[in-house]
Length: 113
Image 1 (cartoon, rainbow, N blue to C red):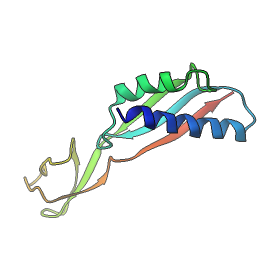
Image 2: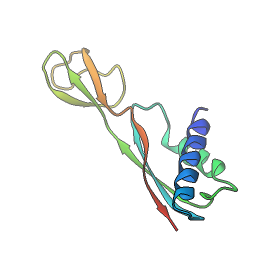
Image 3: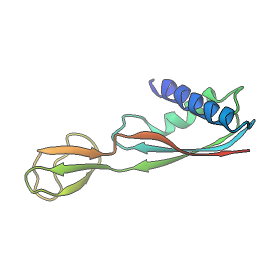
């Protein structure tokens, strides 16, 4: 389960930002998560709660904003939304797609006391 390693990284980012602001507690974390990132939102939520124990993020709400997968179709020259890698172009049926978005994962915002 790589989600735990991801959440440990999120906690490191949170702790760094809290130190920079001389704060002591985090109320919420907003995470952008692409549908093609290979991370399950439910597993991220569970692992975040565990990783946050005994840290400044303990008890913080985790808000996940799921971003769609987007690809450029080389056959019909359109930007199309895809649910997973290997999908065909919904416009022309081609499999010649180049992923352009949806793989990202980033801490977008923190609410800090």
